[in-house]
Amino acid sequence: MAGQALRGRLVGQDRAARYRATVLHALALLAAGDRRAKTLHRLRTHLRRLQAYLELVGEEENAAIMARCVSRFSRLRTLQVFKPYLDHLGAPGRDRRLVHEQIQAMQRRLKDKHAYRKVERLVEHHALPPTPASFDWMGRRIIALRRMHADRLRKLIAKTEAEPRRKPLHTLRLMIKSVRYQEEWALGEPYARPDLVAWLKHAQTVLGNYEERAQFRKLAGRLGLKSRRAIEQDWHRARDRARAMPDHLHKRLGTLATTRLRLLPGRRTSLSTA
Image (cartoon, rainbow, N blue to C red; front, side, top):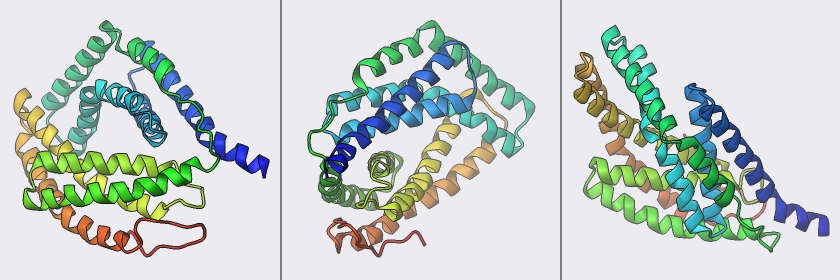
């Protein structure tokens, strides 16, 4: 029993320590000149995981610091995703060269401002919270948060249904992303909801594609890209799919509400990703 309690107390903290090490390694690579998109993506993903863990343990200020660290590299990440998108679109070579130049300029700017070292110091001092005392703290916290998340999502969904514009849809996406990353910390535990995680990830992808295409559309206009008409058409398609998502979420939330977002060990839920 004591061993089980110790495992419960440390499982989250051990994983957080591994994620922190991954973040610090990625930052060291980027500071040394690594320009690969996958390195930056790994950095941001693990920063988000640390942010979610800090939110779970109630370290809101430190979680906000991790969120700002993620945002520090958002523009570079958008450009790095935009480049292969243009390749897939069959954009003219001039368009791709312009975006590549923007990527290089942003990478130089981040290095000149010592952004990687600054984020490294923040991660070293703010990424790991004290170990929670109760061995079953995560299960209790996750179940309590599910009820809170249901209420917040219900309000956001109602707002986006009434006004399905980019800003409220973006706010909904950020909320879904936050819930998803928190729920991922429960995977492998008796109170896990892998079905919920899968659905949240799907909703996040649909809404994220719209936000991404909106950013691409803006970049295409600012840079005067010849492929901007094709990007505009893709943006319209992504917008239509995103605007339909609140209705789908509303129906799913109704399914979740019937169980009060509560999962007991061994209990199965009716939520699916079909």
